[in-house]
Image 1 (cartoon, rainbow over the protein chains, first blue to last red):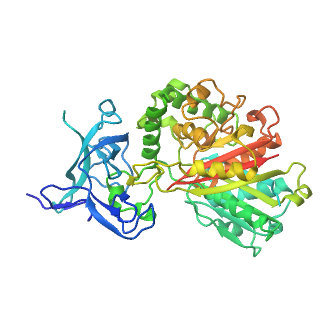
Image 2 (cartoon, chains in turn cyan, brown):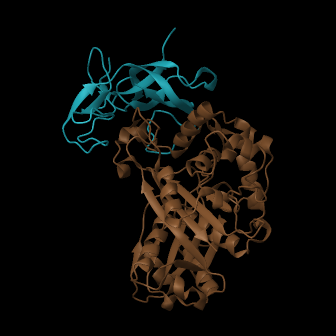
Image 3 (tube, rainbow over the protein chains, first blue to last red):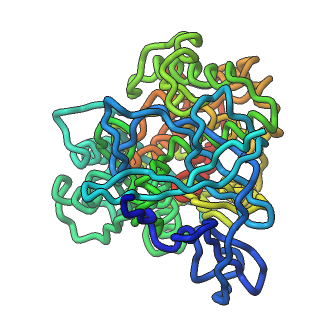
Length: 142
Length: 380
């Protein structure tokens, strides 16, 4: 098995048997943020703690990216192999609304309010064989 | 003390391969100086900015080196508005009597490629393909349509009107009307927004000459007064571009805050405005900005746009020069283009795109990353 590395340190718990997105919560006002920050955007407080965010949520809004972005976009795709991808904000109860890529890119299968799971999967493979892991939102199977 | 606009200048928007962005700015500055009947050496100060074409201060190399304080301004899509506010305050404070504001740009083709690091966001955000302004506007209108019943046809009709207005404006980039069906059926960019519902990065330059209100008639017969110039940034909880997460509880965005402050400053209300220039980097933005600026309730846009109320001869003329959709987006120049257009309208000099009925009050609004908004109110 190839070496698996997170796309950024501190974004989610990794390696972990049950990974989750990592947010920060302000001990002063109780507001959560993602990615984890050292201070609170809501009240300017600097006393924050890191917590795992919920692994399920509801889709708040979405779109589909139909053309390949310029760098810093960095996948294994070429303009010839590029496939449109969904992007949305997932409302994580008690946490925040987090923006992420969706595993579904068919507009007909996406609707505001649908339930989704936060999953972790390979986003790209580096030349040295490392698998770069990122987070995705996947429609919850009925 | 009132602050007046006594000179306006523009370099046509679009693509001008023979001229750099800076040269387009100098072209606009000379045009504005001529319009006011003054010389560059009469200017006591200048503010200006561009996103992709270098320091505005380099205009001195084109126009002449006179030793004045020339301050470069960089504030995303609100660069022009920020320059204007700075000039307004320089005159209002009594420090200077007359000065120049300039904005110009020349961008490469294709979507903007913003750098996450410049906004304090991790590189991963761009690597996975979320550092895209177009996605934000698509997701915002997607949610708005769901909440307030705006139709896809209305999005296409905003663009249809923009291209009609552009066809009437000799300085616009896109000067051919496009059928509403062609707009709706053009290539999907970010659902629900198609190619012709987005503006494109482009080129252009605008300059304005501002002076003390009590001296304005020395220069022109028809001074236009800047009654409000307001810039606001986002508060916690507003839904903004380039946000890896956002609050569960939403609050009003910077556009709502800037509009309220501008109306209060001018002592007038939305119903008093005769001509509106609202940020339309895509057609959904124009729809949402109508309500955010206070010109209608959320959801009323569907009827207003379908009934052509926002056309030049309608009850609420919006983006009478074709807006960003028909002019393209040179970041440094767009906010000042709106002010240029309203000065033309209030002078009665807008020609084929003139709003009828002798307009007296004009309103401009820009929105930019990562969540700022600038508003002006102009009065004849």
